[in-house]
Amino acid sequence: KKNILRSLTQRNLKIIVLPANSSFKEIIDYKPKGIFLSNGPGDPYATGKYAVPIIQQIINSGLPVFGICLGHQLLSLAFGAKTKKMHQGHRGANHPVKNLKTQKVEITCQNHGFEVLSNSLPKEVIETHISLFDNTNEGIRHNKLPIFSVQYHPESSPAPHDSRYLFDQFYLNIKNYAKTNWYKK
Image 1 (cartoon, rainbow, N blue to C red):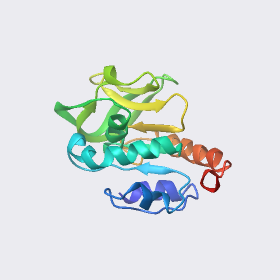
Image 2 (image 1 turned 60 degrees about the vertical axis):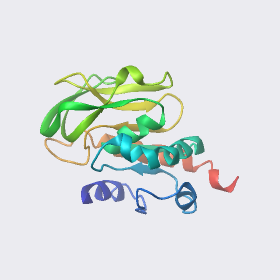
Image 3 (image 1 turned 135 degrees about the horizontal axis):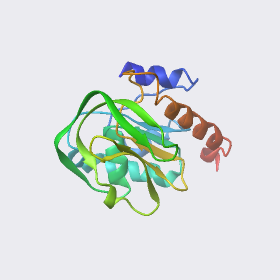
Image 4 (image 1 turned 45 degrees about the vertical axis):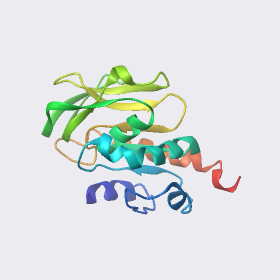
């Protein structure tokens, strides 16, 4: 989606778009300072057959990661969580999502038919957001690594730009992590 790219470039991030089936080596050869896992159609388990092993290598690299929608589901699978098909899914705008840290409600845009099962998250992964429609998982973050994701679309604009702070957080994670020059070690 162009607005994802726009949201990243507005924070002075240089973007390289790669196909979903890129190898870890192909990705790392670009010497990225962060990885964004985008949305996409389909069953996260089916996509995960080829993507999860690559995402696990990305996690192990320590790079900052930000995922949305399918990217959120795949990141959760890479951590060992489970997903399931929802009865109806979440579609459209004006979905209230609660940020569990700030206790604020964000009005979001959503388009997904699968959910991450909160009770399957490993202990090092913290649930950060929940749907106020059905209490399903809407976000996670790793408790030590600069990795987080959300189920909804923060680049969309169904209301005031409630969720744009997530792109700012990703930028800060990249800025802080880039100081280590990990790829020169």
